[in-house]
Length: 520
Image (tube, rainbow, N blue to C red; front, top):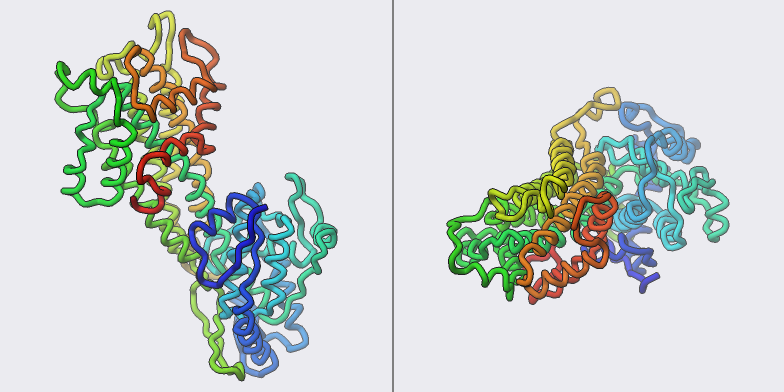
């Protein structure tokens, strides 16, 4: 467990979110936030004692908002809300996503515009800090009116009525809370609604995708550079003057990364003269333009998701002035996750494109008429098929990603008897990123194997020091393909190098190469 993180409401950074996603990090609320939280809760308490109808405090929910609830039933109203909305289905969300959900919900409520007591926020953080993972099914949210079903399952565990995941097994929540010394939460007026109104599930899933894809994209840059050298491509297309004229930041950065990765290559020096090719295929020459555009989209998504991680997405919202707690509750629609949906859709397209251009690079390498390498990178081609069918796998995965990249945000099905008549589908938009990242990692794993094989046909010439390090790293896991063999295990091992960040240290060791989501 790492050093604790102090939660300053509204001030979470991308680095904070990365820490929370990567490992269990103790989180403690900034004590300076507590007076405002108490004042906000008092506004709701006064509304609950009053006679005026206030949505979610003394009324039903959704289409039932016109139904008044008797004062003595207000606590029951909140409990019934959580029970009735815990209707998710599908595989449980992974622990890093649920940890983010707990902290993001606490961060939102701690902004003091939701009217909950300190005990609600403290319980969320206590469950997180104890390493407890509420059982939250992954399907059942349309990303508007909040991520109602998944957040209800999370809340039900806090109440001691739901379940926790322990080593992948569902166990009753109450004993798990007791073992951690945590009292089950009891809900006051509006608190159930505040806990499930919000975009914390879709935001956590989108952040999960963003943070998982970062090492994959770093690997894509490294592997793409290796393929340039393996194909004896030119580094002229990475000339900074070209990219400065266009002015796209991601493109400029990607060209810079490629120049650094290829610096010092003997292979490049060997064909500076006497090569009759005028221009390389687009899959080599246009990598800064394609991957750079993807990088810009991902950086924008990171900005949107950090904003959303710090946002107040409850309804109604509490606004108060002065120490006497005077204030009002105002209904709005911050629970609508359209910003997350659009960001996730942009991420999906970028992930698909990174995989698509990688598939084209594999196709180029195995095509002897273009690469001037042995057909399918096979020794004794004909007797051996080499990478012929490994490329077919890459093509299948790239095609699958194209279907998955269809924007989820353009779909909407009305719910709650047409009261909630436009929804974002943000939760699916973010959830589907996981499959796309896995597909792209496998495509890049296949490319890494192919490019390393191609480099060996050019021996005794060496690539750049950075890329030779990558080649050696792969060869420590997978031998050269001297003759046809069972290749699926090698693909898995190469894809693991891509997914787990094993290639990231090569990328980050380059001069002035920051985290990808921060412009160079």
